[in-house]
Amino acid sequence: MQESADIVIVGAGAAGLMAAVQAGRERPGLAITLVDGARTLGAKILVAGGGRCNVTHHAVDERDFAGSTPPAIRRVLRGFGVDETTAFFAELGVELKREETGKLFPVTDKARTVLDALVLAARDAGVRIVHPFRVEALVPEPAGFRVESPAGVLLARRVVLATGGKSLPKSGSDGHGLAMVQGLGHGLTPRIEQALVPLLLPAGHPLTELKGIATPVRLEVRAPGRKRPPTAEGALLCTHFGLSGPAVLDISRHWLLEGGTLVVSWVPEYTPATLDAALQELRGQNPAAWLAARMPRRLADVLVAGAGLDPSARRLDLTRVQRSVLVEALTAMELPVTGPRGWTWAEVTAGGVPLAEVRLDSLESRRVPGLHLCGEILDVDGRIGGFNFQWAWASGTAAGRAAARAEADRSQK
Image (tube, rainbow, N blue to C red; front, side):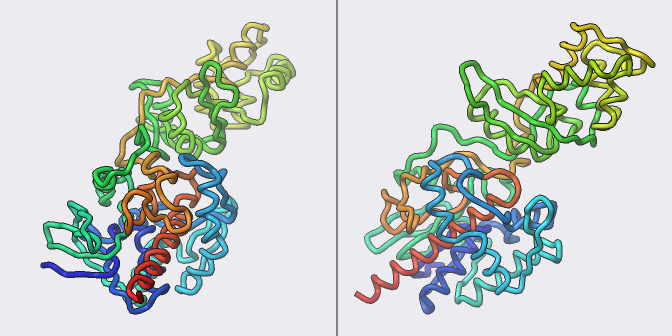
């Protein structure tokens, strides 16, 4: 097989599907082919949000992301914001609902609704979808690119790379896209790490005996000389392997990339001083019983026992030293994390191609003319809550529209 197209989009995940839809709508009549190596399209979309697909968040700005510089991220996001996203999906028949957390889900609570709508929209826009078609090499040629796969060869005037990073490798984002773009002369960030990933604790750690227990916390990554440690607030979930939950996922990229000690406050509404004052008011009441009103009792017992106190005692008159130890255990417990759980459980990739290497209005490569990049292959990763999908919609729109305009303008000359 050897065929040609005006535009080939590599990767049919969220960013690639959006790029395909927007390219087809921007300049009807162009020959646009969307390829993906998977037998089943949209694996990441289907598993997102517990199978419900957290399409976006009601309020998104550059502060919700890490990686490249905030001004660069802001510029791309402003090209296709939350209002445009909700209108886009409404047009496709996908009504979104806002939950208390600010997350927007389809009213069907089914990720399949989102995926099917995107695939249909791409086909309606005239896009040809070919899969499985795993791209093994991308070769620049005088007239464009040679897109090589064991399934055949595509000749393209322009290419949009939406191959993802390394998270959830079974979906196809196994890092091969990063290797391809690096082979074309692009730089990558010094480190490519897991993000939004659960963290491991040593075997036998007391918290691993509390699997299934969740509670609101504040997490910090502390290091000597660091004035403003990265923080995350939200639920922490104890598991048989260590830690998960929204707060843990959000802080994971900071612990991995920036280093330091992960510290948890189990009572985020208290400072050490206000907690010490509250403990003094207990007047002999066991702090485990007091804590049980704020968290699951089993967790309260483990924390009190970890501070050297008996959680089952009917009365505990705490000394100043005991109070100090308990305050430290509750507001600044060090968590001996041994590493991330692995790429299979990471929701996104931290690192990639810096935004400085693409033109922000078109996401066209500054190093390889005719090549556009979007989605997770770029050095942008958001916190949990639909932010990474919003980056996919915004960057896919920018790349798809720009590629279509550029190719249509070329053909008219």
